[in-house]
Image 1 (cartoon, rainbow, N blue to C red):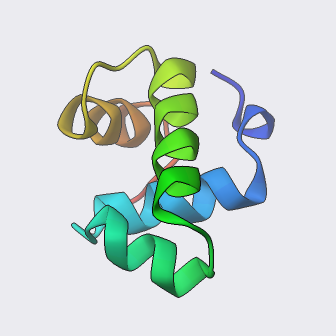
Image 2: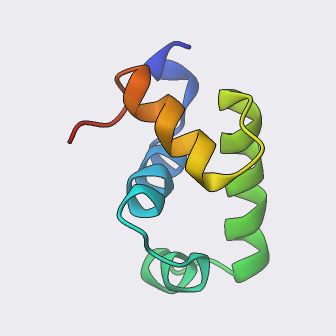
Length: 68
């Protein structure tokens, strides 16, 4: 997967998910609705071909999107 395939907002949400931030808090911090946050998270999952948050974060680290 190419890093350019994630928007800036998707990347920011991905980083927050990796930091174990709940979606409700992510929505509040980014000043977006909870449903919009969930929609973006689903798009991220689809881009990483991941069924859940744990698998998505694993793939993001493995593919170099996130660093320890």
